[in-house]
Image (tube, rainbow, N blue to C red):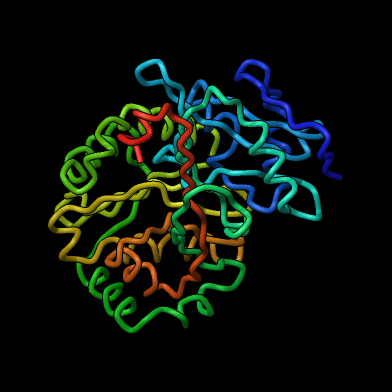
Length: 310
C-alpha cells in the first residue's frame, strides 16, 4: 500500500538496484528501458524518488549546463514517470507527493510521463504525445487479419525482393549502418551512437535485445531494426533502410518478422510511436492501438533565463 508520508530523494549510489528492478517488473508498465542497468547505460548519473521501500519509484535523469541542473528525457527511453506495485495505481495524491519531492536545485524539467498516468492529473505545461501498441497475445493469423491492404501488399513486395532476415549482425556494424542512413533524417541521434553501440552489446549479452537485419540477394544490407524485449513487451528502439530497402519495403518485412516471432508469446509490440504523420500512417497499417503519454515542462529558472528557455 502506498504511504504518502514520505517520498525520499536518492542519489545514484544510494539506489538499491535490485529493489528498483523488482518494482519495475511488477508495475503496470514493466518496460526494459526503465530497468536500472538500462538507465545506467543511457544516463549514468540518474537519481530517483522512492516511496514505501520501493513500492513506488520515479527516475530522475538529469544533466548540468552552465552550472544549472535540469531533468530531461533521453531519446532512448520514451516514457518515464512514476511506477508502482500498488494495486490502486497512480492517483493525484501520489503525483503531488512525488512532484513536491523533486529537489528545487533541478531548475528546469522536460520529462515524459508514461501512458498509465492520467494526463489531467499533471501540473505545468504539457504536450500529449502518441505511442503505438500492437497486441501480441493472439496467434499470428489473427493479428495479420487486422493488417491494412497496403501493409499486406508491401509485405508481398518485400518477399518478391527475396529478402532474407538474420540476427547475426554485430553491434558495431549496426551502429555504422545507422550512422550512415540516419545522419540527415535524425541528426539528434548523432551524439548517441556510442551509447547505442554499448546498449546493443549489453542487451544482446542479457538476451533482452536483438539486431534484426534484412539482406538482399546480392548480399547488400537493406535494413536493420534494433529492438528490446522481456516477457511483457517487445520495443523497437531504432531502425534504418537503404535506398534498396525503401524500394523493397524492408521495414514492413522486418516488422512482420518480429510479429511472427513473438505472436502468442508476449503481450505487446511497442512501435516507439510518434506524432509525425508519416510514421503514424506506417504504424497504423499494422492494426496498432494508439496510447497517449505526456511530455511535461516545468520552468524554475531565474527570471531572465526563464524568458529565454520557454
